Image (cartoon, rainbow, N blue to C red; front, side, top):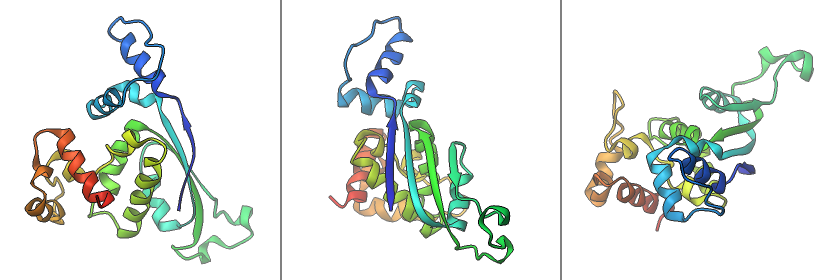
Length: 194
């Protein structure tokens, strides 16, 4: 379902930008996995150097609408009558469209807090889950910080909770850990079925 088209930027750029903010010289090579995890958890601005571009083909139009609400680049196949020759007023909400997204690591963290949430439409969450799995093959450290808001905030901030987090705590108490890495590790074990 998710096709990762391109990863723009690299971790050498991220670490060098981080080092420049404290007056240090270029590292000259890619940083360790530990550095990647720490800077992503801290959400420091150099993580915006890495941009992910992906595509979903034949996504239902109404699901694409959920994704265009976020503040990053997206390109959705036009349904304009003058371009397609089809009367757009006759198209159903589930008419398939092609969707290309382009978001930096910070955008992805912010977006997935909402789209991996069990309050999101199940169809929309399915795309978020598939994106996380697909990204894991290319950028596992970024994929591993993508989580629903309840895990991110250690509790549900929604007006009406789905109680997913509360139900999971019974079997997985580390989801409530004050150690964010421990909390994310527990969520990822649940997510990937380890």
